Length: 246
Image 1 (cartoon, rainbow, N blue to C red):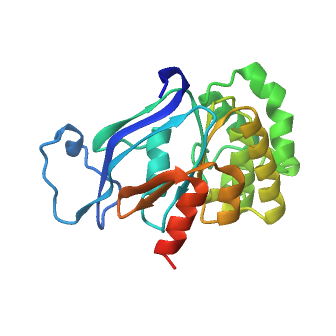
Image 2 (tube, one colour):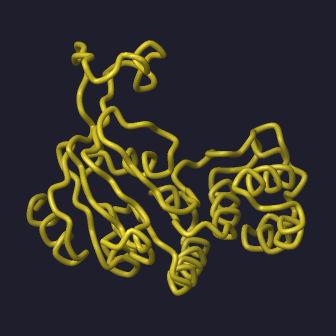
Protein backbone atom coordinates (compact mmCIF):
# COMPACT_ATOMS: atom_id res chain seq x y z
CA UNK A 1 0.00 0.00 0.00
CA UNK A 2 1.35 3.40 -1.04
CA UNK A 3 2.68 5.16 2.07
CA UNK A 4 1.21 8.48 0.93
CA UNK A 5 -2.28 6.95 0.69
CA UNK A 6 -2.10 5.05 3.99
CA UNK A 7 -4.22 6.51 6.79
CA UNK A 8 -3.77 3.81 9.45
CA UNK A 9 -1.23 1.01 9.89
CA UNK A 10 -1.77 -1.64 12.55
CA UNK A 11 0.93 -4.29 13.04
CA UNK A 12 0.83 -7.20 15.49
CA UNK A 13 -1.43 -5.28 17.85
CA UNK A 14 -2.03 -6.71 21.32
CA UNK A 15 -3.84 -5.29 24.37
CA UNK A 16 -3.98 -6.98 27.76
CA UNK A 17 -6.53 -6.31 30.51
CA UNK A 18 -6.84 -7.41 34.12
CA UNK A 19 -10.11 -8.71 35.52
CA UNK A 20 -11.62 -6.99 38.53
CA UNK A 21 -9.47 -3.88 38.22
CA UNK A 22 -10.04 -0.41 36.84
CA UNK A 23 -7.61 0.47 34.10
CA UNK A 24 -5.29 -1.80 32.17
CA UNK A 25 -1.86 -1.42 33.72
CA UNK A 26 -0.17 -0.14 36.81
CA UNK A 27 2.44 2.61 36.58
CA UNK A 28 5.12 -0.02 37.21
CA UNK A 29 3.85 -2.05 34.25
CA UNK A 30 4.70 0.80 31.87
CA UNK A 31 8.39 0.09 32.45
CA UNK A 32 8.20 -3.69 32.66
CA UNK A 33 8.82 -4.27 28.95
CA UNK A 34 7.85 -7.31 26.93
CA UNK A 35 9.32 -9.83 29.35
CA UNK A 36 6.57 -9.35 31.91
CA UNK A 37 4.52 -12.53 32.19
CA UNK A 38 0.75 -12.65 32.42
CA UNK A 39 -0.51 -12.16 35.94
CA UNK A 40 -3.50 -14.06 37.35
CA UNK A 41 -6.73 -12.66 35.95
CA UNK A 42 -5.13 -11.12 32.87
CA UNK A 43 -6.46 -11.74 29.37
CA UNK A 44 -5.80 -10.46 25.87
CA UNK A 45 -8.61 -8.27 24.57
CA UNK A 46 -6.82 -8.06 21.21
CA UNK A 47 -3.81 -9.94 19.90
CA UNK A 48 -1.93 -10.35 16.61
CA UNK A 49 -4.19 -7.85 14.85
CA UNK A 50 -2.77 -6.35 11.65
CA UNK A 51 -4.33 -4.34 8.82
CA UNK A 52 -3.90 -1.22 6.67
CA UNK A 53 -6.43 1.49 5.87
CA UNK A 54 -6.15 3.87 2.91
CA UNK A 55 -7.25 7.49 3.05
CA UNK A 56 -10.92 7.75 2.10
CA UNK A 57 -11.90 4.22 3.09
CA UNK A 58 -15.00 3.60 5.21
CA UNK A 59 -14.40 0.72 7.62
CA UNK A 60 -17.09 -1.02 9.66
CA UNK A 61 -15.85 -2.83 12.77
CA UNK A 62 -18.04 -5.84 13.52
CA UNK A 63 -18.18 -8.24 16.47
CA UNK A 64 -20.12 -9.32 19.52
CA UNK A 65 -19.99 -7.26 22.71
CA UNK A 66 -16.66 -7.52 24.50
CA UNK A 67 -14.64 -8.53 21.44
CA UNK A 68 -12.38 -5.45 21.33
CA UNK A 69 -14.18 -3.13 18.90
CA UNK A 70 -14.18 -0.05 21.15
CA UNK A 71 -10.68 -0.89 22.37
CA UNK A 72 -9.46 -0.84 18.76
CA UNK A 73 -10.96 2.60 18.21
CA UNK A 74 -9.30 3.91 21.38
CA UNK A 75 -5.94 2.60 20.15
CA UNK A 76 -6.38 4.34 16.80
CA UNK A 77 -7.41 7.52 18.63
CA UNK A 78 -4.24 7.35 20.73
CA UNK A 79 -6.05 7.37 24.08
CA UNK A 80 -4.83 3.85 24.87
CA UNK A 81 -1.41 2.26 24.36
CA UNK A 82 -0.88 -1.30 23.10
CA UNK A 83 1.04 -3.96 25.03
CA UNK A 84 2.30 -5.47 21.79
CA UNK A 85 2.71 -4.21 18.25
CA UNK A 86 2.07 -0.69 17.08
CA UNK A 87 -0.48 1.65 15.56
CA UNK A 88 0.62 4.37 13.14
CA UNK A 89 -1.91 7.01 12.18
CA UNK A 90 -1.10 9.37 9.30
CA UNK A 91 -3.24 12.42 9.89
CA UNK A 92 -5.35 13.84 12.68
CA UNK A 93 -8.24 11.96 14.27
CA UNK A 94 -11.72 13.25 15.15
CA UNK A 95 -12.98 10.78 17.78
CA UNK A 96 -16.57 10.22 18.83
CA UNK A 97 -15.94 7.18 21.00
CA UNK A 98 -16.99 8.17 24.51
CA UNK A 99 -19.97 10.19 25.65
CA UNK A 100 -17.99 12.58 27.86
CA UNK A 101 -14.64 12.36 26.12
CA UNK A 102 -12.85 15.71 26.19
CA UNK A 103 -15.61 17.64 27.93
CA UNK A 104 -15.41 19.19 31.42
CA UNK A 105 -18.46 18.85 33.64
CA UNK A 106 -18.21 22.20 35.43
CA UNK A 107 -17.66 24.23 32.26
CA UNK A 108 -20.59 25.57 30.27
CA UNK A 109 -21.55 24.35 26.81
CA UNK A 110 -20.02 27.52 25.35
CA UNK A 111 -16.73 27.01 27.21
CA UNK A 112 -16.57 23.33 26.31
CA UNK A 113 -17.02 24.02 22.62
CA UNK A 114 -14.10 26.46 22.64
CA UNK A 115 -11.93 24.17 24.77
CA UNK A 116 -12.56 20.94 22.88
CA UNK A 117 -12.26 22.48 19.42
CA UNK A 118 -9.08 24.25 20.52
CA UNK A 119 -7.56 21.02 21.82
CA UNK A 120 -8.07 19.54 18.36
CA UNK A 121 -6.11 22.37 16.77
CA UNK A 122 -8.88 24.74 15.76
CA UNK A 123 -7.74 28.35 16.14
CA UNK A 124 -9.74 30.94 18.09
CA UNK A 125 -10.92 32.74 14.97
CA UNK A 126 -12.05 29.49 13.38
CA UNK A 127 -13.86 28.40 16.56
CA UNK A 128 -15.67 31.73 16.63
CA UNK A 129 -16.59 31.41 12.96
CA UNK A 130 -18.01 27.91 13.41
CA UNK A 131 -19.49 28.33 16.88
CA UNK A 132 -23.03 29.22 15.79
CA UNK A 133 -23.15 26.28 13.36
CA UNK A 134 -21.97 23.91 16.11
CA UNK A 135 -24.64 25.10 18.54
CA UNK A 136 -27.34 25.12 15.86
CA UNK A 137 -26.52 21.57 14.73
CA UNK A 138 -26.54 20.36 18.34
CA UNK A 139 -29.89 22.10 18.93
CA UNK A 140 -28.55 23.64 22.15
CA UNK A 141 -29.25 27.33 21.57
CA UNK A 142 -31.01 27.66 24.94
CA UNK A 143 -28.28 25.77 26.84
CA UNK A 144 -25.11 27.63 25.86
CA UNK A 145 -24.45 28.82 29.41
CA UNK A 146 -25.56 25.58 31.10
CA UNK A 147 -22.82 23.52 32.79
CA UNK A 148 -22.06 20.41 30.75
CA UNK A 149 -22.75 18.12 33.72
CA UNK A 150 -26.40 19.23 33.74
CA UNK A 151 -27.05 18.14 30.15
CA UNK A 152 -28.95 14.94 29.42
CA UNK A 153 -27.07 12.10 27.73
CA UNK A 154 -28.85 12.91 24.49
CA UNK A 155 -27.70 16.53 24.67
CA UNK A 156 -24.13 15.41 25.37
CA UNK A 157 -24.17 13.22 22.28
CA UNK A 158 -25.52 16.07 20.16
CA UNK A 159 -22.80 18.41 21.41
CA UNK A 160 -20.01 15.87 20.96
CA UNK A 161 -20.98 14.97 17.40
CA UNK A 162 -21.53 18.60 16.45
CA UNK A 163 -18.03 19.60 17.60
CA UNK A 164 -16.28 16.54 16.15
CA UNK A 165 -18.00 16.83 12.77
CA UNK A 166 -16.72 20.41 12.40
CA UNK A 167 -13.08 19.38 12.83
CA UNK A 168 -10.91 19.22 9.73
CA UNK A 169 -9.22 15.98 10.83
CA UNK A 170 -9.05 13.44 7.97
CA UNK A 171 -10.00 10.41 10.11
CA UNK A 172 -13.39 10.10 11.84
CA UNK A 173 -13.94 7.49 14.57
CA UNK A 174 -17.56 6.75 15.52
CA UNK A 175 -18.53 4.27 18.24
CA UNK A 176 -21.95 3.13 19.46
CA UNK A 177 -22.31 6.45 21.30
CA UNK A 178 -24.73 7.73 18.62
CA UNK A 179 -27.26 5.09 19.69
CA UNK A 180 -27.99 7.28 22.75
CA UNK A 181 -29.45 10.08 20.64
CA UNK A 182 -33.01 10.23 19.32
CA UNK A 183 -33.78 8.99 15.81
CA UNK A 184 -34.30 12.45 14.28
CA UNK A 185 -30.90 13.66 15.45
CA UNK A 186 -29.24 10.37 14.54
CA UNK A 187 -30.55 10.75 10.99
CA UNK A 188 -29.09 14.27 10.90
CA UNK A 189 -25.74 12.91 12.10
CA UNK A 190 -25.79 10.26 9.41
CA UNK A 191 -26.43 12.85 6.71
CA UNK A 192 -23.41 14.75 8.02
CA UNK A 193 -21.30 11.57 7.88
CA UNK A 194 -22.38 11.16 4.24
CA UNK A 195 -21.09 14.69 3.58
CA UNK A 196 -17.75 13.96 5.28
CA UNK A 197 -17.29 10.75 3.30
CA UNK A 198 -18.03 12.66 0.09
CA UNK A 199 -15.16 14.99 1.06
CA UNK A 200 -12.80 12.00 1.17
CA UNK A 201 -12.59 11.50 4.94
CA UNK A 202 -11.62 8.12 6.39
CA UNK A 203 -14.28 6.50 8.59
CA UNK A 204 -13.92 3.91 11.36
CA UNK A 205 -17.47 2.97 12.36
CA UNK A 206 -18.53 0.61 15.17
CA UNK A 207 -22.17 -0.41 15.18
CA UNK A 208 -24.47 -3.39 15.68
CA UNK A 209 -26.87 -1.93 13.13
CA UNK A 210 -26.38 -3.85 9.90
CA UNK A 211 -28.32 -1.29 7.86
CA UNK A 212 -26.02 1.53 9.01
CA UNK A 213 -22.90 -0.54 8.38
CA UNK A 214 -24.00 -1.30 4.82
CA UNK A 215 -24.94 2.35 4.26
CA UNK A 216 -21.59 3.87 5.20
CA UNK A 217 -18.95 1.17 4.88
CA UNK A 218 -17.38 -0.63 1.95
CA UNK A 219 -14.98 -2.74 4.00
CA UNK A 220 -15.36 -4.61 7.28
CA UNK A 221 -13.16 -5.91 10.09
CA UNK A 222 -14.67 -8.83 12.03
CA UNK A 223 -13.24 -9.18 15.54
CA UNK A 224 -13.84 -12.28 17.65
CA UNK A 225 -12.08 -13.76 20.68
CA UNK A 226 -9.40 -11.09 20.53
CA UNK A 227 -8.43 -11.69 16.93
CA UNK A 228 -9.16 -10.35 13.46
CA UNK A 229 -11.27 -13.13 11.95
CA UNK A 230 -11.99 -11.53 8.59
CA UNK A 231 -10.93 -8.41 6.68
CA UNK A 232 -13.08 -8.19 3.56
CA UNK A 233 -15.94 -6.32 1.92
CA UNK A 234 -18.60 -5.20 4.40
CA UNK A 235 -21.10 -7.58 2.78
CA UNK A 236 -18.84 -10.61 3.19
CA UNK A 237 -17.96 -9.62 6.75
CA UNK A 238 -21.60 -9.23 7.79
CA UNK A 239 -22.53 -12.53 6.11
CA UNK A 240 -19.78 -14.31 8.05
CA UNK A 241 -20.71 -12.60 11.31
CA UNK A 242 -24.39 -13.50 10.89
CA UNK A 243 -23.54 -17.11 10.03
CA UNK A 244 -21.32 -17.44 13.11
CA UNK A 245 -23.96 -15.97 15.41
CA UNK A 246 -27.18 -17.41 14.00
